[in-house]
Amino acid sequence: MAPVGFIGLGIMGEGMAKNLAKSGRQLVVWNRSPGKCTELQAACEGADITVAETPAAVLAKCDLVYCMLSTPDAVKSVYEMEGGILAGVCAGKKIVDCATLAAEDMVRLSAQVSERGGTFLEAPVSGTKGPAHAGQLIFLCAGDEALFNEVLPTDLEAMGKASFFFGAAGSGARMKLVVNMIMGSMMAAFGEGLSLCEASGLDSEKLLEVLQLGAMANPMFKIKGPLMLQGNFAPNFPLEHAEKDMRLAVAHGGSLGLGLPVAAAADAAMKRAMEEDLGKQDFCSVVAAQKKQKTT
Image 1: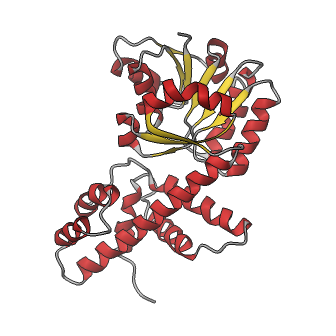
Image 2: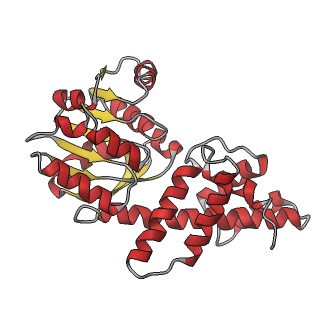
């Protein structure tokens, strides 16, 4: 089987690349911090993993390349820099981009790849660090349907538990923003609930028990609740990334003439937490700022 490329070995990409390696895939990898590449090689002892010097060098060795970069700025930089992704795209090259971006950014990337003769599939994922390492991500895809059908039974199934195709480029990004907007709004409400419980002198542990026994039971509350009570905000989904997604979702709603006041309030709560220097911490750290929030 031909090697595949993987560009971006951060919080999410590391786990995704490991699962591709476990599935028997030969990998050619690149990361902005080269140490991540050698860490991956060490963690996947026995796997065939080669480190490339540039993103373009990854494409020189692989017809199919996965990208998982953290922010819109990082995506633009790695695509357009000297020796970047676009420098390596030509006829026959296939790009599957798993970043969470605004729909217009995905449309731009699709056009940039297509005009160079390549094929583009957007595949943003629902899931954080744990699901990425466990191969339990949900892929929200759009763009080239033939490429989706090609990678679905092999690579996407190795990295995830479900995959969906939504049509033209940009549609996957829009669905991902909807999903993350709902998740972020839930987290902000959860944080306020824990804050009110504590301020009322009630047992927050008991609140978690009550929630898990009723209609509001869900995996996020079950996992994050104890961590929030402990003040353990080790990043699985950094707050700065969650706030970026909330901001993009609210802006997308505005472009459609649709007000999203709940999401806007959740975004404001995340922004306050970032002002407390919590941006690099997990998005459940929003509760730390909420506990300090005073009425005006």
